[in-house]
Image (tube, rainbow, N blue to C red; front, side, top):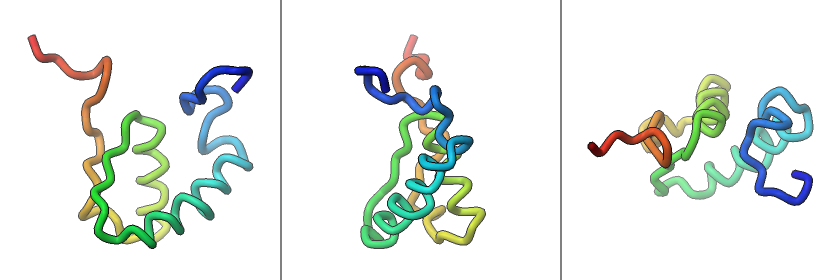
Length: 77
């Protein structure tokens, strides 16, 4: 976005019709085709998108590491 990497914040991933459609049409189909893949969402926005897909019936919960800590969230002190 505007020459920078998209972070999922502006515009909001699930609140933007075009991006939400990408999640429901493209991402969901990709996750169906990769049925043996472990899914590690890096960030709250991606986790929210996966929860939405799970709520819509996509059977991926057993291979998702939801709420997995990533940069800026892990306390290794």
